[in-house]
Image: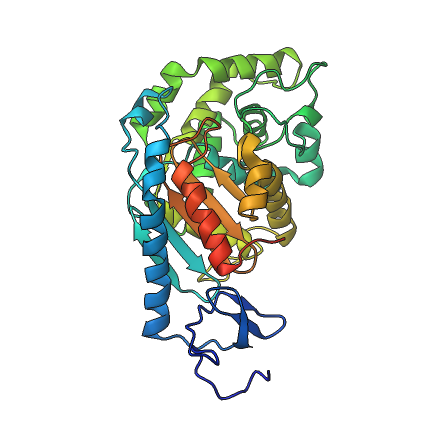
Amino acid sequence: MASNARRSPLLGPEGVLILSDTVDKHSDIAYNRDMRCVWGYGKTVSHAERNAMEELLDALLKECQPYTAQGRVATYIPELAKGDPSDLGIYVLRSDGRHYQAGSYRKHFTIQSVVKPILLLLALLDNGEEVVRAKVGVEATGKPFDAINVTDSPLLSAHLNPMVNMGAIAICTLIHGSSYEERFQRLLHFTRQLAGNPEIDLDESVYLSEKRTGSKNRALAFLLKSYGMLEDGVEEVLDCYFKACSIRVNSKDLANIAFVLANHGKAPQSDEQLFPPEYARYVNAIMMTCGMYDGSGDFAIRVGIPAKSGVGGGIMGVVPTRMGVGIFAPALDEKGNSVAGIQVLERLSRRMYLSIF
């Protein structure tokens, strides 16, 4: 159908409400909420369309709320054990600038492993792809995020990836700075820049809790050091890593960061190029294959978008060229991923045809 066809931008031939994100912008085709092709693409925004998207998010959260009872909040970091497992929130930022939210999207939590793509981006900016690739590989380990036994042979950089703890600890050493405190401050500034939120800061209580109980991460760091993959002192590197994981954010912050990755490195409002498009591809590809820990393959089939989870309950989802999604739901499965969060993303992906496959 020609793009100048004089139809309502919201209604298809049978009066079916259309959500404009279910649009193939390259073929000028739109789909209804059951994913049937219905009519040519139009960009006009209306109150009815906004209501439809908000109603969809509300319905998905209501549908997925029971899944919060199937997970448990992380307890190995004492401060995280204080979380409310029933929390569930979502924030969506789309390429046309519209945003939608539902549930506990305002609630703050610590970023935890969702910081790993940000660490990787900053390392790429500081060093370039060749140096980063030489330090940390890109292949999935098939092991839990904090696994020590990633290989039966002598440890090599190729055995790691930036989305697991050992790889992220190694990435911390690539961030430029005269001290590890300066490196953390640069990471914090970069996170604020990506999220467009200067209020993002360190959660001191979670940081101290992680530092007191981080024996497993110390073991990982000493293993790296024993293989010559960590030149600096274990404690100073880990201090930076613990602080990085303890940055306090909310669902909106994650959606904004995800959108920059979806938008080839450009900020959503200023259109400022925060990092090169090739770094967005690099990070998105690794999130696709490794971002959901040893559940990444199942997530790729069920949801089909690059994403990164954290044991604080956050999930950052990237829909290339279309949207960024931030979810908070701290009840986790045995792999450390948000149970209800994955359910919401799976349903949203099916309803809005988000899968990249």
